[in-house]
Length: 206
Image (cartoon, rainbow, N blue to C red):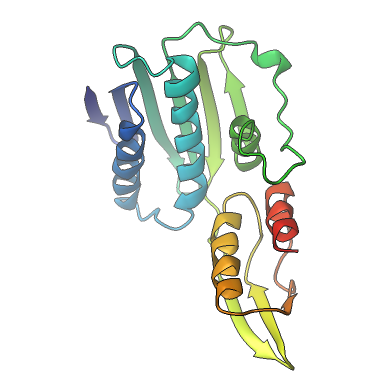
């Protein structure tokens, strides 16, 4: 089951608990926000939406297709969206939830809510713990200039290195290594913020 409802500033979904529908929801949301010219900075909202939906399908509804996930994305302004996700599970004790990014950069699990918290201005749960709301700002996409200087490969980001942009950085560095890069320097002149996820990407490179 998959249904979509669009209002002036809100797109709402009702979907069965199937992982394949997570990407479809993200795709529909991207197309909806593109109508407002909000393609720039969508990566942060995409990560938040996907993490919350995966958590609802996998942990909330235990991947039972007969259970439903409800989701809405509301455009509050050109720079801020409200993402709400609710499952039909029993909920969990969100008050004891740790929102710290795991120190081990290779640890994939336990990153969902910490990642969402890192990207959102505010994170709210209902009392039962089966519904969450995240207020997600739209951030400027960080690009990366790469050039050679005195035998070194220089990587120069033109913005912040955060959870929203570090995946792109990691993929780019992997390609550089595959192409024979053996000495690398970073020019952070235009970087004002590096969060723990961004640092983890640099640690993995080292």
